[in-house]
Amino acid sequence: MSLPVQLTQASPAPQSPPPGNPASPEMQALLNQLKDIHEPAAIGWWPLAPGWWILAGVVIALLFAAGWLALRLREKKRRNLYRAEGMRLLRSVALDEPRAVEEINTLLKRVAVVTFGRDTCAPLTGQRWIQFLESSIEQPMPQAAQRTLLECLYGASASSRTDLEALRDFAIRWVREHQLPQAEAMQPTSPSLAEGQHV
Image (cartoon, rainbow, N blue to C red):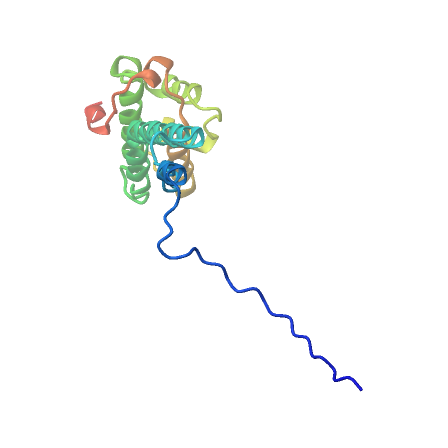
C-alpha cells in the first residue's frame, strides 16, 4: 500500500534584482534619455473661435440697430409733440362757453401755422379755410362742423352742443391725422404750438 503523495504546487517567488547589482552602462544611458510625461498646455481664451466672432458681430449689429431705432422713435415723438399738445388743448375747450368756436378755430390755426407756415394758412378764412383743412386730411369736414365754423365764428348766432362737438371732434382728428408737407416732414426741427400763438 502506498501512501498518497500530496503534491503542492508552489507559486514562483517574485524576482527582484539582487541588491547592489547596478544596471549596465548602456541601460543607464537609455534611462537618462527618458523625459517626464508633459501634459498639453491649457487652452487659452485668445484667439477666439470663429463662433465667438460671429456672436460678437451679431450682438454689435443688434446694439447698433436698437440705438438707431431708439433715435428714430425719439425723433418721431419729438416731431409729433405739437400734435399731442394741440389735441390736449382742444379736449380742454369748454363747449358751453360763448367763445368755444373761436377757441377751437384759433387752436386749429396755431397747429396749421406751425405745420404749414404762417404765409400759407394765417390769411385763410371761411370756405377757403375749410378747403385747406380738408385738403390735408383724408376725411371731409362734417356738415355740422362746417355750419358752426361758417355761421357762428364771427356771427352772433349760437351753435348747438352737438354741432360744437362735431367741430371739436373734427379738429382733434385733423390735428392727429393731418399730413405734413414733404419739405416739413424731412426737417429735423420740432415745431411748437407757441410759434403759432399769434395768428
